[in-house]
Length: 170
Image (cartoon, rainbow, N blue to C red; front, side, top):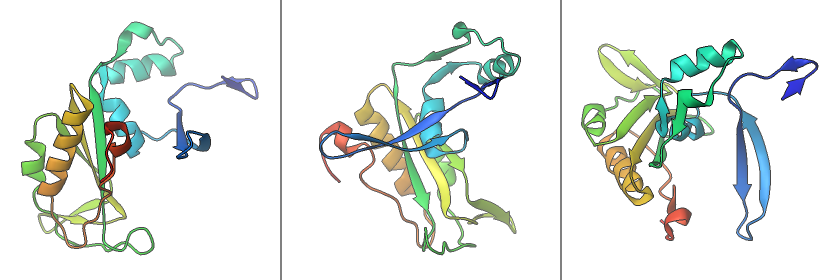
């Protein structure tokens, strides 16, 4: 892709909305690696991401640097009380170590801070609980298992992530 004579080098994520009738609508383009949508993509990449990014910046990206796994990933965002209008901040977060012990789970910090030796909420999207597994069902179960282990006042999260793909509604 070239814009104004300058080749694009990087990651481009297309955010889509799928209607109940199956129609697609483009909502946005993102290039941030911190977004939950990107966290699930990064979870199923095998290879040296830093090496691939450096090669892309030099215009020398080779397909063999990264491989998309056949595994599945699910990300559940834990949001602060009051999100999105006026997210609460300063609430102590517990259970991070326990959540990180669930097999295949990584917990990504987004709206957190360290105060007096404790991790606290400091924004709307607080954490991204991302699980990787051989099946979508197992990735889903692991992500929600880990999400339930993390506690903070006002914690909220969607309970329908991947429900449609799994054939059920939450």
